[in-house]
Image (cartoon, rainbow over all chains, first blue to last red; front, side, top):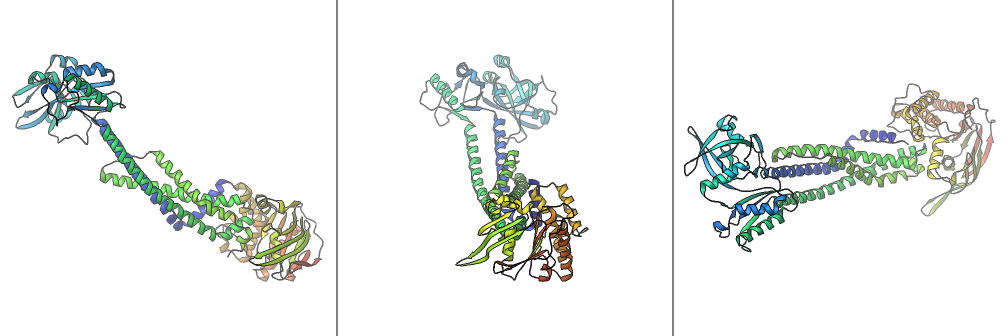
Length: 402
Length: 236
């Protein structure tokens, strides 16, 4: 007998037992929908975190002075350190910059806005992730000549100055010591971040670190920012760079220099989502086995109920394989249907939960395919015993069955 | 042509064994219309089940169209039931969820016919038994006589060499009985070989040959009429 006939027959049987079929599918539906919901939410949160990390800057690391140790100015990172790091690790770096900050205020009429000046060098736009909206970032000649230039946040232009047409204009900012004045050379924008602090009245801007040095007379720093080209050996690179600095300052073994990168956080996140997924899979696996046993149970009942039908079919020429196929297709169809309904439920559930916990679920089509294939094979597996039982019925006994 | 040689059938139920057929020899020639008559428990149904390949003999040889049935695999025997034998049961044995047309189509489904030719053959079989217009009805929606006509149409569908009828009129009133017997007689006149079980002698009188069975043994074998010459060259 051909496949289409068997499938048609199975559909007819399933359709004439709607309630029973629905109840049979329940176990599969619950199992598959919980898997789909949790996997898609897990993938969604993983994606969100990865996005967050890449906004922070890809392959980014921070070297900083260990604040638990007592250190002097001579122990701190300086420009000669940066130069020797560049000499040795240059081909592995996308950028390296000392960073320092200067808090200033911009006064406009009666309103005051705080503008946090980050003093960096010309490679900093390779370290942090932001895009230039107009103008340019700091360049080598800004650094070399310690020019009083600034790259402003485009939000500052939009919200405070109400115009973006400000390139080349001078901006005056108040500091504790008095006022400083910069020429605006560029506007940047940064993707909105979940981690970064943003209250709408505080803005960041970048100035050449050489310019800050000129103002303060200080040329040693507590922090270096680095971006590596390759993500694989960031941890060990941080260590060897700090070893180099240790040697240069004669501080070997004093544990004065520390390093940080988001690799560990990311690994931690992956570990957490990984073990979450495992836990969910185990629970879902149990419910799928229970669902499968439910299918087997109903199929056994169905075989007993339809003994006479099986006898008639055999009497008019159905082979063992015909009967086996009929029942296997029926159970496979019930369970695949359950799988599909489960996927729909799971997606609905994931979207609903996603609204509340603010994580957009992300589902790969692969997962859905696997879910359908898995539930189908579940139906076949748990259908084998009842189907085999049906196919082995002796036609004359089956015909006599009342 | 059917040949039973030295057929024994023993039922073992626990410690008791019961011999339903005892050294039965029978030959049914093509085109014949044979009735098998006997009281209940005489073994006539057992013989019918063996003839129809629904059951296997304990010992002896059954040759169906030149094939020794005891040597065949399960799948081949299914094919015999499908192509060589048409069954008509006392209790009709129609599938209640299928329409009469679908019931008649069922053997052709297992034979692998495409749906178009299935429909065509099933419609002509239903027409032959006088059920034109009842194609869409479910078996529960038609009378007993009509159900038996559907069953006959189903038995005819694959154009089998032999039709086996197990008390086909047992559940029917006398008027319907004579109608059904009329159908069998005209099928025989067309050349179909028919073996029919009955326990009513007056029905047996309508056939060509009456075989009487008692306690598992053939006790009488009387020919009433010669084998009719087929009007059309239908079956062998």
